[in-house]
Image (cartoon, rainbow, N blue to C red):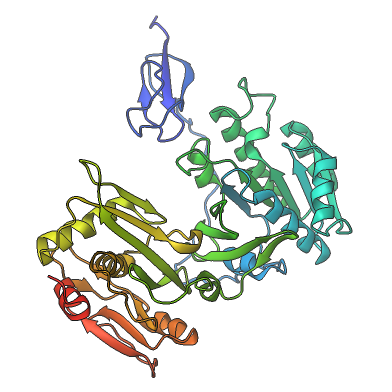
Length: 455
């Protein structure tokens, strides 16, 4: 008889191993390897036998189905990120740093949904019911018909939801849920995976919309196995800096709408307030034109957003110059500096470089390359760009400039806020933006010589 052997697998990537280790060699995640149980050395799975299954109903790609019905929350920024409203039987995961405002946002959303007629239950696993009531009173939501409970036992929560039959359930948070059929501590990989699976399955089976609050790691990723993000329909990240009042709700996955959509909120004493015009708010504290300050016309999801990029270049007192970035990718900054030195002959050796996206906004769009390069050149040459100019465009390693998508929407947004000129790559289409003067540039050398006279 073959000797039974133990096998282990990674809950994040599914890789199999003969022995346990703290780190998965396949995906690099820590503490994701669990024992599968004793398996014989025979075939990996049993045959299904000769029993026939049910035939599947096949359809054509051209088959038309009605779009899912949606419920409006009354918070337009949240509805925008959700793709137009809340879809029944959907599971949504909301992640963010501690204290960023996740519970506040979802309590406000629960109150709006409840007042619109949806039966809503809010289950808190982190706070007592009295603490949630105090927050509701502070936000002026104490009269909202939201049912409240404080519990971490997953079996009791599901039993309650089965009996109450709500249309919306909010679980705060998934890391505090405890399934009694899993031998692991709350917050562990096994518990988070099991709780997310049970709640998502319940949402699909009973037609209940479920919001799950998730903690994040120091790297900004939602804590627990990545399979949780695959289980749910929508993944939202709540971003922002504690020193700023702005908060960004970003959709990174949405099966019912566009991804990378953002909603902008402002943290006030009475909760989170919607920001109808984010560009005006991000530029509200911008003063007179100064060296190193450039306005970037970006696109977040389907929304054009104007933000200020600030750069500072100063002689370094250290043997190795510093490169500090806030709100942008540090690797892409290194690439822009290398292109400026190799293709334009402008060295940054021995100079400290600091780059900041004002307002706490985080930018990942390649079209910000040209705005970053312009900010660096402006700071290095101590020359300010005109106050009525916006900049956007992607830079290649050869120094050539590539046109950005949705040029017309970027220019229209800039024109609304009083900008009259734009520096953009040659070939950018600016139809329908009468009144905006477009300064086309073929490569980075044109920007260096034509705008700053450097080189």
